[in-house]
Length: 360
Image (tube, rainbow, N blue to C red; front, top):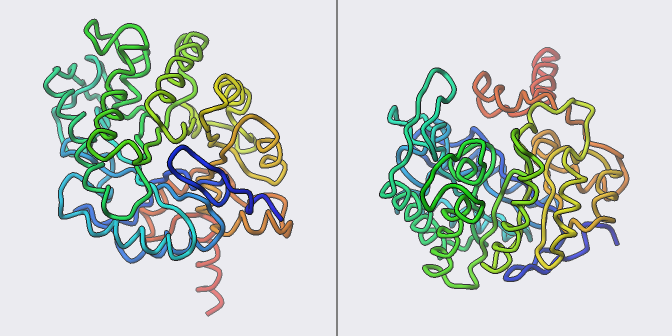
């Protein structure tokens, strides 16, 4: 028996093991929001390699909230059937599939009328205005409607993306949220939009429909207070019936290539704070030693992203002890390479392609 054989029971979902494929944008979709054969093949391959749960790349819930030109969409009924096909593929191979839903906020590429939690300067000389209450309500409803579309596709729930400086994370984080109404100020208000989305999904889809959330474990301003604020978030998520919290961080792309388990100490503390709610660590899980360290901690779930882009079978090989660590370089070229070479997502894979071509 290996760590791939240890099941995990969540409130409304049972996983065959504690390993998650964290949501990573694949760059494999069409520019009108549909999955391609390459996308389906990715899910097929991942689900054949031991993962308990696969979380899709972030899917756009509304026009004006698109983060990437080839991002998969779920803001219209025409996008429903592709999730049925993906879910059937994953389930046939014994894994579960959860869809991450997201709104890019001021990072959106399909609008020039950028709106944010508060008025702010954003990247590339863009200026965002503060969202109105009516706009906040429309975003809330877009998340709920997207979950409704997914409910009967066979997927195993949704994950709300509230990390990585997309819209919901900017409401949660006081670095960006300077509102003075019911959506700003104390953490009870800053988490209100997420709470309304979660409650709305549960009401529309049923209390047993699995909902998870991805949140930054840290911030760039008053990080000590932010950790205290996360205690409230954890308690609220528990009361709302959340399946699990997946903790990421604001600087995961800037971590040294040699770094591992980027946020382990804090996430272990957060997991110990409320052991009834499962939590997952993502970022820098690279070796058998990393996995063993997490499994001996209060953290119940382990998420991998770039390591699975590099080697979709890495978990099986780690479990069999045919290798001790991932070959992933943590170079982040997987975020740029697909724009240069279609359907190529890892620099090591590209090197193999070039070497094979040279031999021919």
